[in-house]
Image (tube, rainbow, N blue to C red; front, side, top):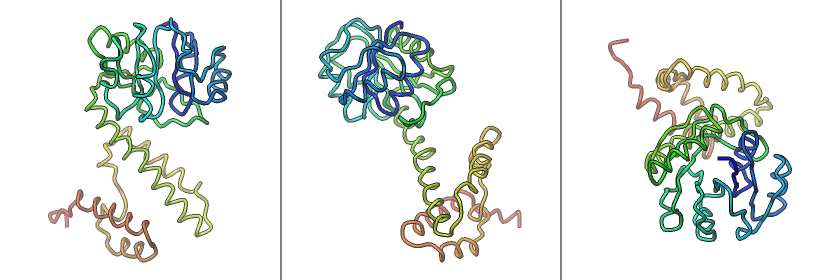
Amino acid sequence: MKRVVIIGSGNVATSLAHGLASCCDVAQIYSRQLAHAQALADAIGCENATNDLQSLVPDADAYIIAVRDDAIADVVRATADNGALWVHTSGSKPMDLFDGHRSRYGVLYPMQSFSRQMVVPLDDVHFFIEARNADVLENVRELGELLSRHVVEADSEKRRQLHIAAVFSCNFANHMWTLADEVLTSAGLPFDAMKPLIRTTVEKLDRLAPASSQTGPAVRHDTQVIDSHLAMLQGDKRDIYRLISDSIMNRNPIDDNAQ
């Protein structure tokens, strides 16, 4: 995998481009917005940026489609099979988007939260891979191992489950922090006060399973505290607090023998 083309310039593409630039030749960056393609190309020292899918360099070893999920099929249909390896990076879209359009294809899904504004180191990111056949799978694995020590085979159904788990682990967790920030701001308190708590909560996962590290009033069935909190909340915060508390209590029933 000496020459790679990255189709996309957004959140995932940015970190992939920086990671690949250190170990191979990123021959071209594509984006619908030429300025975005050029900015990413400049950032990694790539001399070729384009906003024309018909102008993709024809002789790269691999083409990585790192665009919005709903745009992957459009990119596949708009480009031709040149015998190279083609992969997309989606956790929720199946590999068969390439069926009938490519001879060598697969999926290279990085399990991480990416933002264009922050380049994420990829060494410890888990990449989940799939491919049309065993030979192509080894090519996808080779590409993944350029970026990370953790490359794991997972078919489209497993990736969908991974994506659901990621939404719970990251997107929903971040929304909880957003709600916490709003509660604190309304009280004139800084969100920085939560950061050591959040870090410790995450660090405990290196030693304990998530269910074993659960704390708080709901796991204790402390309904007096829960009711006092509910009385202070309104709207969706109140509904979410009640729903999550009920879920925790249901998963942690009171042990009458421990009383």
